[in-house]
Length: 161
Image 1 (cartoon, one colour):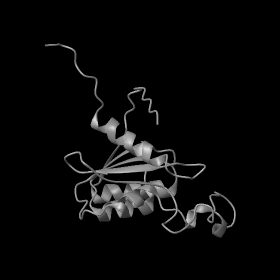
Image 2: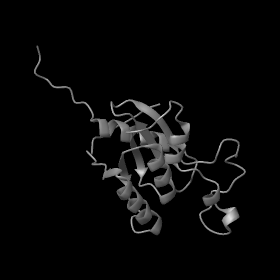
Image 3: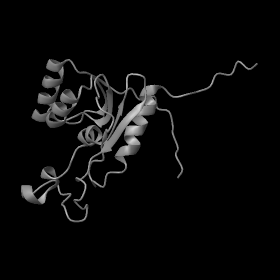
């Protein structure tokens, strides 16, 4: 029998990897965000990425970040967290954990709280000082939703498809 121990990835590495891969489906040229929701026993329940609602063509709606509100992406895109919540078809998400590549905005925080998700593991918090993220954290704290930053392991992962 060998003493060699298998080098396996942690649950956080695994599920954040799924969220990152999911985000790669987004056609947003500036920010690709992915999310993965898992049960308390580490089963994937749902995934999502930022994009337009079903039936709204990526070619017909704008991806711009600036200009006339009706000519930029903000009124039209659905964030990865909300997509993952809406994609779930199994009933309650009570007690679930959300892995997301970008800290949730205030609108997504509302959906996370209402859905029963209790923990968030996020990768980037690049908008930490914006009113949207400050409000998000305020609501998550008040509702008892725990959140923590993903700890990078610097493990190299190569996926060939």
